[in-house]
Length: 300
Ligand code: PEP
Ligand code: MN
Image 1 (tube, protein in one colour):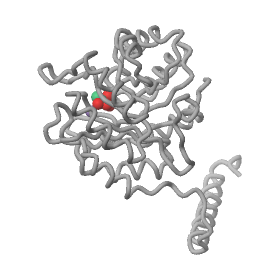
Image 2 (image 1 turned 45 degrees about the vertical axis):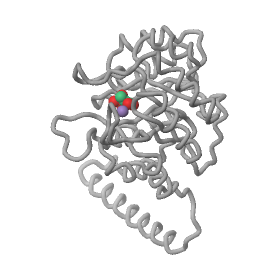
Image 3 (image 1 turned 180 degrees about the horizontal axis):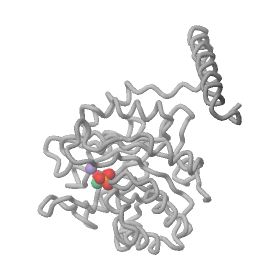
Image 4 (image 1 turned 180 degrees about the vertical axis):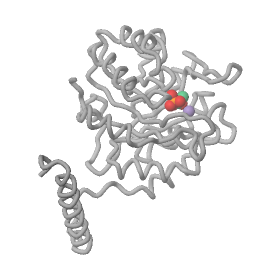
């Protein structure tokens, strides 16, 4: 699969090796003022791309389902004011066409759409001949094949600027988080498609503000390439996902606490400890193989 890295998406996204790609903005575009205020206030915090939901796939009818195309000029204005590229969710071919017509710079496929190969294929068909970065969220259910299948459909449409977004997996009566991280699934995705960058979305995993920092730090420790964090000028009155959105100040607090993953060190205490662990693991490996070879000599 030919995949181009986020820094090569042609959107002027300058990342240092220690800096995760950061997408932020409101869950939904609600008013022009809310979009512009949120985006201008977060722009100087190290955000690389602005987000806002235009079409919202809601679990139950009657919830706010997004304003649709009328909100797209606000996103464009936010981009002009901040100099940052924008992204929004698409769930149909029509959404793709409308978003592109209004100059949205990158698109993502939401978790409720990734589950449906017909919907993903419709989006892929609308993307033929188009050069726009596409981010594919995991399906709501923990099915890696379905996630990879959606990525392949977009790739087969000729899109090379592709990234995955990990937003957790739903279970009935979720104990702590709104969605379970099941980190082993994005880790397996990394093994299967090593050149695919993966962004973590702690907001939709957590479901509340409480665990955003913890999850974001865990994602960085696991070498994720970026973060998507929802922010809102007045989260308490947000029309969707009110509990999990943070103010620009709240976002700044999280970002200030995050530590990038340290790839090397000359701390001798740490290096000694790691060497001791490696020796123990080697010894245990040898003992395991010796035990197994008692029953089957071909193990040695
Ligand atoms: C969103 O990003 O606001 C959203 C609806 O996400 P998800 O598809 O992860 O539920
Ligand atoms: Mn949301």
